[in-house]
Length: 295
Image (cartoon, rainbow, N blue to C red; front, top):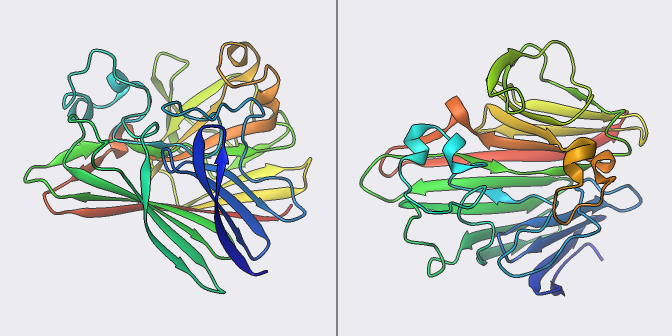
C-alpha cells in the first residue's frame, strides 16, 4: 500500500490518519493539530505526550499546535498585535487551537498527499482579524507544513504566529541545536532581556528563548538515536526554543514529570520584531519542512 487516508477518533476528537511511502501522520480536526508523525522503523519525529487528553475545546499536549493570531500570552506580543484585542481572559497562543478546522481540499497521488485545512468560519470568534489562515500539510518523502495568511480586510493587520512543534528526542540533556550561533534571542526566563547566542545550544535547564534574524535551517543533533532532524524554513526569521525541565514539568497539564527528557520544542514563528504585517489583499506563506538524516 503506497498511500491511504482514513478518518479515526482519539477520545472526543475526530482525526485523519495518513499513511504514505512508509510514513504515518495523524492530524486532529480540532486546531488542525498534527498529533503524530513517524517513518516506519524509526523513533517518532514528533513527540506526543503519553498523558495527552483528547477533549473538545482543549489543546492536546505535544504534536504541532497552530498558534494564531498571537503567540504565548497576548500581553507579551508587540503592541501592534496585542492592541487589536480587548479580552477579559485572552487564551494563550491565540484563538484557533481549540476550534474545529475543515478539510477543504485533499489531493492524493503516488508521489504526495496534500491536505488543506481552514478554521470553520462559523466558529471563529468576533475578535478574529479579517485574515483567513490556511494550513497546508504536504507529505511526500518528508513532511512540510505551510501556514498561509490572506488579508481580505480593508485595513493593515499585524499578527504573531507559530507552528508549536514538539520534537521527540532520546534525551534532551544530550542533544545539540545547530543554526542558532551568532543570532540574537530574547530570554523569557531572564526578564525578556536580549542576548546573543554563542556556539551551538545545549540544554542546561529550563529554556524559553525567542530567537530572531535566523537563517533558513536549524538542526537537532541527537547522538542517542544517531540522527539529525533538520528544519528547513521559509517565510520566517524567528523561532522559539522551549523545554520546561524538571520543576516546571511538575506543574504542566498532560505532561509526565520526566517528559522533559523526551522532547524539545523548536517553533517556527513570526514573533516579536518578526511579527507579520499584512496590507489589504496581501498573501503570506510560512513553511517548515522536517527531515531526518543519520548523524
